[in-house]
Image 1 (cartoon, rainbow, N blue to C red):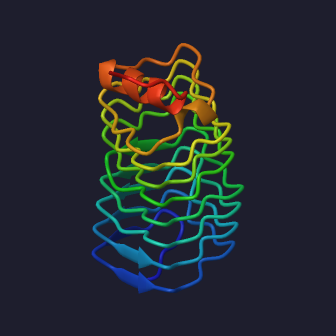
Image 2 (image 1 turned 60 degrees about the horizontal axis):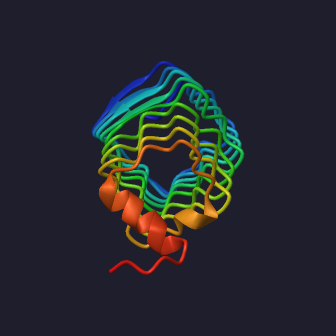
Length: 186
């Protein structure tokens, strides 16, 4: 079954297919695979995805307003120019995702795997990254004002390259910040 507006899909597999410009508003997927698919300019607003795999898919300039991803795999997905307002994320793996320059304010990213994701110039003001895995994520000029980084894995993250005013850090995060600022800790 091909995805369509308000469709409900379970355990369907799509590889390297184009959904460019399609209206997939209200699409609901459970355990589906969309590897390497092109969702450029697609309308995915209000869509709901549970345990689906969108690895290496492109969502450039797509509308994901109010979309929700629960325990989904978006490894290597590109969101350049996408509308992510009201996005909901519950766990999952977003490693290597391209989220450069995105407005992710107030987004709940607790326990989300964001290993080596490109969050450069993204606005993560007041985002909840509690327990997220940000290992080697790129945060150059990212805004983390008021973000909750407690228990987040910040290994290899250059926190000094981000703006972190009033960010919440635990002791481990504070030590990593001090190291990224050039402090020598004995």
